[in-house]
Every structure is written in C-alpha cells, then in structure tokens.
Image 1 (cartoon, rainbow, N blue to C red):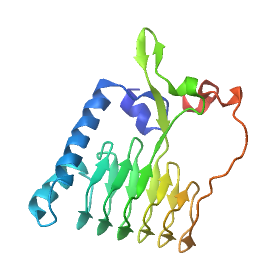
Image 2 (cartoon, helix red, strand yellow; image 1 turned 30 degrees about the vertical axis):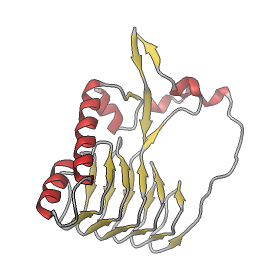
Image 3 (cartoon, helix red, strand yellow; image 1 turned 180 degrees about the vertical axis):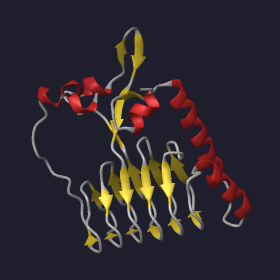
Image 4 (tube, rainbow, N blue to C red; image 1 turned 120 degrees about the vertical axis):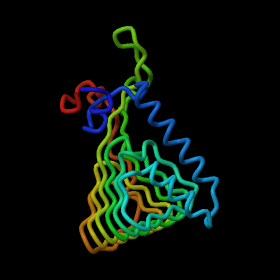
Length: 204
C-alpha cells in the first residue's frame, strides 16, 4: 500500500510522504486564496470550492477563512453552510450530509498520534526520517447543526437531525434527533508503556 492508501484506510503512514505533502500544499494554497476573497466574489469562490472540495453538492458556502488539510478527502452534500474559521483535517475521509449548518470555529479532526512522545517524534526507519500518524474517518449525517467552537474527533458519527451545543467536544457517536452538549474531557488513567503504538497490531 502507498502512504496515501494507508492514510485513507486508517493505518500507520508517513505523513512526510512527498506525494501527500504536495497535495497538502495545493489544498493550503487554495484555502489561503479562498480566505482572501470577499463574500460577493461568488464566481471566484465557487471555482475555488470546486478545486478544493471536488465532491460537493449544490449551494456550498464557506464564510472564510477556511482550512482543509487535503479537501479531496472530504465529501459534502447539498446546502452546506459554514461560518468563519471552519477547519477540516481530512487525513481520513470526512463525509458531511445535506443541509448542514456550522457555527464559527468548528473543527473536524481525523488525525491521531501515538500517546507516547517516542511515537510522535520523527523517527529513522530504514535510514529515512519519518513521522508516523494514523486517523479515523468522520461522518455527520443530514440536517445537523454544530454550534460555535465545536470539535468533532475522528471515528465519530453524528446522527441525522442532531444539534451539538457550542463548545462541545464530540469524542463518541451521537444518535439521531438529539441535543448534545458539553466537554467530556477528564482524567482517566496514567499513560504506560502499554500505550506504545507498535503494540497496536490492528493499525499496521
């Protein structure tokens, strides 16, 4: 498998792969150009959206500024609205349904890293410097509203018609048709050598 194939499959990959770096640079350039446009430059904005996120439906609107890692790994349905500072880290597939409504500063983050710094730091493997990473896909079904400053982690599915309150950090699946709020962050346990990424056989 190529590093891109591994990345999209949620396996360990080298994020410094030249092919991936070039695709990221392209997306980052498009994001910067889009973020420098004005609301009434509709034709220019539409052209940039078409290039940045080719798989989108009708009536896609980003207030801007906007940031995507790749763009090409995100799929958006019809009638999508995002207020300013939308961030989509789409190292794994991100699927957004129809009639989505996002407040300011929403972050969708699929990348994951080893919990131990020795796994996060740049390593030398076969005489080559590599930065190991993996991720999990993310899905937001039709007709959802995400309030301002919501963070959705990789591996999560938010069910159709649900509302996520401002400032929420979504780390687990949300069922359909509910109001969900809050930040679940809390101390669970100490980190140990058992957290080494090399022991997670399902990721390799």
